[in-house]
Length: 546
Image 1 (cartoon, rainbow, N blue to C red):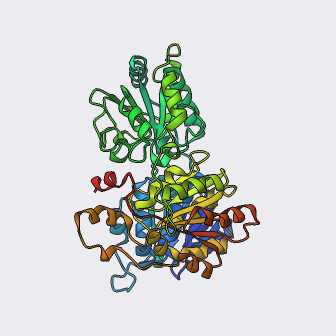
Image 2 (image 1 turned 180 degrees about the vertical axis):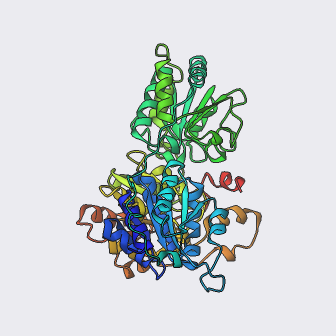
Image 3 (image 1 turned 135 degrees about the vertical axis):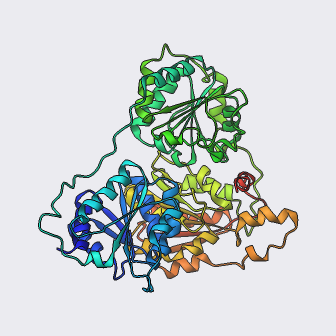
């Protein structure tokens, strides 16, 4: 057995059930070996799309996916998606063939590339150690929650594996929950007992049913309100005391209540500039606590009064065990009435700017929220439009929104939705894109059709890179570089085998209702010509973060 086959079969046996990629000569045998062992391979049309699909699949399935790419350009094509995964600490294994001869056209310093975007690296260096080295790379991805590049030199891939060197223990790796220190739990319990207006903000590290239930129980005991970061949206979907998302996407009421907290506890949440509006959501006298199983995350973005190293669920349950009797805290009748009436963005009054040719993106999003089935999984691209689908389209739980925005690259939204759809196959997949990102990622429309995904692709089409238009336009700068002639995105989609509709008014959405009620035998693209008279409400916050 050659190294390429031994590594591929070993990784599949160790639990890597999904592989995304584009196959070339350097990763041909490795990928086929994984398929032969039982992994499902998803062929993308571009390595950048494949990387983002793998990232989204890992996030929404809770398992480690693999990305398989050719040496050199296969890896460079994938780098933006790999950067997003690495910045998001997605457990992901990148399998890259490697040309080690500097005179090769395919040669680049692949280790340096990976490290430059925050991924960690490993290499298969011998036939004798190949399987063990691959296993260790997978374990690091799982245990450290990291994106790991495993380089597979072409000459090593072609070597024969000695007898017995491929028969190692290949049980799927598991991550051990970090037990918090007793003194830290006691300190947390004391802070909670003193608080009168506590708010919990749950992030990526709290995205599990166990963490949700533990946090809800602890919040109930102390009268805390519940919020999430954008990546954990939906975690407290059915809780009447939920504020939805904290940060730039927060509704006016949510922001007001978070600003009024005397205690904010971040649970598996970075408390970065996006989640805190550059700190403005945290009052001068507010006590700030952060709980994370990675000690290096504590206080990384802002000073905290108490940092607790520990698993979110374990820490919350230990704190609950030390809690006294139930207190009302922030859960008053007035707050309850306000939450019922106006915590959702769709309940906030607005002036509808729709006309004959353009539909207000808020009106569009509210209508789609009513039309599309509630059991959905949404992938969102980046851009001026992104707040509308992220906040106006409801999600059933923490697996309802895949928010790949750590690198803030446009063009990843469609591939995000594909990976999320494969991870949540019982839900309607929805890709929310701007026209710029839609055209960047259009090649993967073929992947949607080829996989038979009953996806709805919504293009918020303002014929521009809207963020730049609304950021620079008010100061009188020329905008010719960021504005485009009208593009018939619906026609592009039909060319890929989609059903498509152009939406200019609310009445045009009747075609979407018909698609939902029908067999959904082909995916649907909605080319929504949206009003562009103003920037999104969160845009100023976004540019402040540059």
